[in-house]
Length: 280
Image (cartoon, rainbow, N blue to C red; front, top):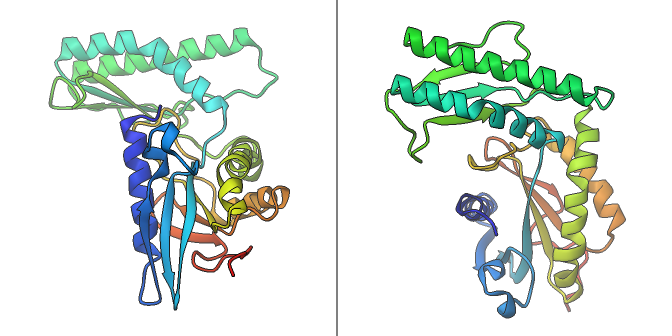
């Protein structure tokens, strides 16, 4: 079941698409939200039906939203760091009477690194984070990131005992561009999700005559455990998307991207102009 944050972000994404793609020659509005209906009442298994008015034509398009994810191992790195540090960081925040935000770079390892070495590095990172938090609390000021620190650790002290959600500690992971190429990352981590969307969500509507659009979200929402891949350019995403479309011909008419700055890009096709038009 999607979280309230995920549902709100999906609403925001669809609203942004409609607003950005509407002008004097074309209007795009949300007609229906099949994904919000009870399972037994869903005729189409998509996130939205969009009403598109273009020139003298009006059509309903089937739309589905897909997040552009970071590499799979990021989730494990985030979990390893936060599980190790949270109890002690929470104690530091409690004793200081000030909420903490911990910004850090999740540590990723090449496949050749053994489990013992990974654990040792994770433990060292956790110890460094807790010590930095203690120092910040003792001095009463933020701990800035240090040059050359692989963890990129930063501790922010807030002038309140808890965050809005009641917690004393929040984490803000960020990811650098090191490691596998962005294209390879997208082929491994985005392509399977896109292919699944094409096969399981959009193929059915396309078969029954609906033009289809896939909406890729590169911005995401604050509640996501793993950030979106904000490093990938629209051109790189288009390249990988094209490879997916080639594996599922005749399914996708258009693709729209919401980039890390919430700008809207039409990557493939144009909403209002079906590529695989079966309408009379």
